[in-house]
Length: 395
Ligand code: HEM
Image (spheres, rainbow, N blue to C red):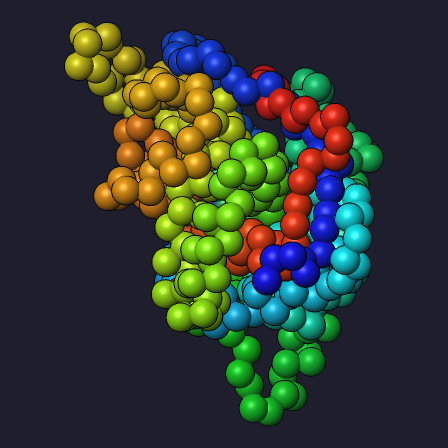
């Protein structure tokens, strides 16, 4: 079956595996706490930063949509799968000869299409204007935040009106509003109404309360697209670097889809694939530190260290609690109860922990399994001759 697969070699780049354990821990003066707060709190309320406001909305409307509707939705799997097949057909084609693809750019296209189909429905997901918006807003937002930070605090409320990246963000929010208005108008007259996407779920969760639909969509884009893309990109690179994994993965995917199709049950049965993704995430967690918190009252740690109020804390993303921690073992989590990608533990907390644990992790698992299972069953993949991807620490 796989002899007939289309063949791809990939241009890939990826940085130096991080080996250092790093713990950020320092006390801050109260004025520094404000200055050091992340993009999320510090720029809340600036026009153009509405995507962040949606994530931080104390009413948790967007987060409730993710938790109640997005996470365990059978129809989302079918919608994402359908989008992915269209992306593969047009980007990777059915050419049976080996051909090079730009995996870095294709991975974001695949994730942005799958996510958008679930967030706003397949029609808007395929709109190139919408795609451009959701894939570039995050970067513009961070560049805008960086530019704004270089100005003294008293001038920021004025200079943000003229800084190019801030202006770009405002334009993008306006574009999102206008495109969504068109989508709302289109849906208003539609019969029967059978959309199952976050546009509809926001209405249900808001239950009459006012909310900014464009901000919610941009908030979903910031939270999901680049994070998921990074994990997808690296997992396929790792599979190519450890090609002995490919055949067992293909067998597992074929058995799971033959019995259950691309459904919750089918994806659940891709356990080796789950382990491979989790192992990739262990060695490239996306952030050098995680579990960022601030002490709101004094805390004494078990080792006696006193953490005063206002201290910002973060934990290294590279716990050394694993056997042979530097080695990539695709089946490391295969027989580990509670070792699924979506589970969090004191050893593996790439999705965070506790009250603030990432609510989007179920969608991440579904999208990655859909994409990788489809790639594995349709294509042979290998790295370009001479390519030696390495993970680099940035920060
Ligand atoms: C590989 C992809 C992803 C990674 C590694 C990731 C990681 C994280 C982490 C580390 C946190 C903070 C958890 C904590 O502090 O305990 C977080 C929060 C969050 N994530 Fe994700 N995430 C990913 C994908 C997504 C997706 C696809 C969505 C949306 C569908 C999403 C939505 C959110 C939201 C809304 C929060 C804030 C939760 C809150 O404040 O209660 N994430 N994510």
